[in-house]
Image: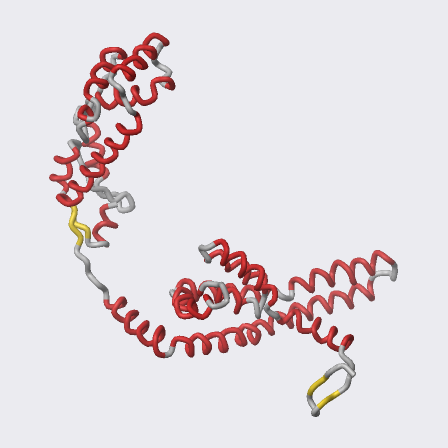
Length: 331
């Protein structure tokens, strides 16, 4: 992936890297086919066994490694160390060899955890040294980052809450406005289908089940798909542009007062349109407690599908008695 390194301004000293690793290093760009012939040649020319050790394995436990090599005919220091770690699970060792390795561990007081820790420390020290020697990266800040910073200074400080309110007031009513056309089309199609089947099918229980049950039930669900699709698209745009994270940052202090985080803002606002995608959008909340509380609170946000239910309940439970010309209260 040498092309990716070039795109990120990473300079690699290939000869020095090969020297430090002790093996040939071939830069390859598989997508463009560059370096593949050199890689094949390197494989053909270096088919013999490489004895170079990346770290000084023997220094971890020299007595144990030498004794295990003599007892098991291990071919390298690393193989001997691994046998000392996992001798009971090495299938190529017989019972007598496993007993020898066990006694060697006891004789030299071999501590598996300490030796593994020592190996890890040595490896990362070597890796860090190689990185410092062979890799250099020039940090070039693009103009887009400067532009984003300037915009953030305005939108996340001076006009942050105003900008959020304006976006929500524009996007969510726009969602209902745009979705109204496909919703009317779906409503017309299902209404026309019901009338057509009423005239063509005989009047019986199966016809009522098909028209009033199946067709009406499917239509009642499908008619909300345009709203949900547009809302998902709106949320996707906010996430991909980075606006969602800025909304979370701005609203975090306010939401903390009610036991939530700033990431709960978008799901709660989305619940005004539809609770289903709003609950699905809570996946971005890291803290499980905040996510659970947001999921439980989101259905309490009134979406457009509940307005007819509210009207029905108000008409059923509240009498038509007016006070001060606009308050409707019980008699």
